[in-house]
Structure formats: C-alpha cells, structure tokens
Length: 79
Image 1: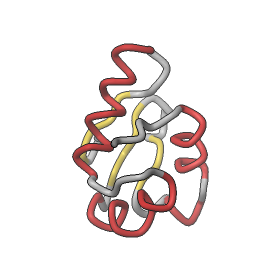
Image 2 (image 1 turned 90 degrees about the vertical axis):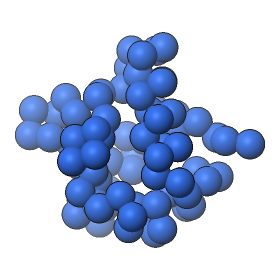
Image 3 (image 1 turned 90 degrees about the horizontal axis):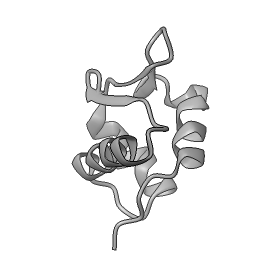
C-alpha cells in the first residue's frame, strides 16, 4: 500500500537543511529540485513514507499537484 505524500510531510522534508543536497526548492520556491534521487530514496523517503521508490514518490507528488493544486511542480533535476 502506497502512502501518498501529504503537503505537510513534503514541506517538512523540503525545509530540513540536512536534505538540501538531495531535495530543495528552486530559488523562486515554485518547483522542487531533486539533485540526488538515489540518496533521497535510500536515506530519506523510508523515514517519511512507507515506501522508498523515488519514481513512486515523484509520480504521487505530480498526481497530488494536478488533483489538489497545492504542490509545486516536481521534476528530476526539476522533479
């Protein structure tokens, strides 16, 4: 069972300085930049979500963004 990213968990993940070398906001705060998806999946996602596949995390953020309209765009390099 996949636990979709909630805005609260996603924002807390992005606000932690220790994660900024892996995932961060772009300078305008409109997009999520993922610099190291493998590290993110291995070290961070399992502590925040029930799964650790980066592709699932990215897909769910984009699905949530289109259905709710509250998440910024996600891309790999700009996830």
